[in-house]
Image 1: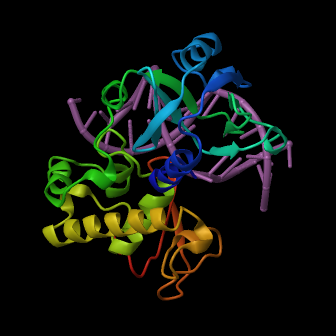
Image 2: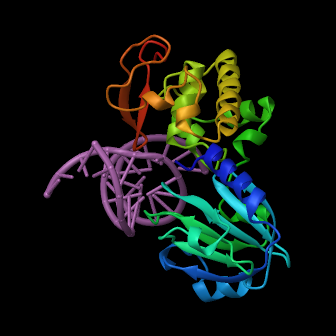
Amino acid sequence: MPELPDVETYKRYLQARALHQRIERIQVQAPALLKGTTAQALGRALKGRTFESACRHGKYLLVELDHGGWLVLHFGMTGELRYARRREERPGQSECLIVFDNGSSLAYIAPRKLGRITLTDSPQTLAHDRKLGPDALDLSGAQFRELATHRRGTVKAWLMNQQIMSGIGNVYSDEILFQAGIHPQRSVAALDDDELKQLYKALRAVLNTAVKKKADPEKMPADFLLPQRHKGGRCPKCGTALRAIKTGGRSAWYCPRHQRT
DNA sequence: CTCCATGTTTAGAA
DNA sequence: CTTCTAAACATGGA
């Protein structure tokens, strides 16, 4: 589930393994993932280059090339990176494979092909082109409050709107609202100062904790909703059966006792 | 077989 | 202009 914590984990993974190695070639198995570029153009841009650094904006991972320019990876609903030191360790199936001249490789795997691979001049350019709001973990409390003014929609849709703030998806918006004790369908405008403060606190705590746990659902704290977020799931704090509702075209899971309308 | 899924974009309505 | 809904995208899993 590639939301902010997952993509942050991929970023650290890439930084620890795939920097400073000469790119020999790339193999694009799923051209549909390329947006605004072609396999040929991507090959020309990457071949002979090295990755110098990586950064993240919301759910986007950006990788800097040594001669300027950035590779942009978005993972859609499913997707991950896998680095292999040796040829024998390469995954059988990858939508895009980057092969380094020392025989190692970095595979972009997105079996449902809803991701995106593209190039950009800079992280700022990407944020501008995609109209992305600030990264959710870069927000100050004051900025967070400011973003809430003049908003009429539901709080869940607000948290998930990448143009308002970037990085929170369906799963972590549920977790943040659960930890803050706020119902997903409350209107942003109706939240009082205390609730906004709780929400901000929960946002930071949830995202930072998830990053620390490498976005692994099995390693989340015992009071997290995430592992219970399915049919038959129970509130980790009071045992009440969780409820699911459709809102904003997505399913929201919540505890009817801890998150009142 | 049907329905649903962690994301984004687009179209159309209110 | 904002917000909501539905549909589309591609594919695997229940």
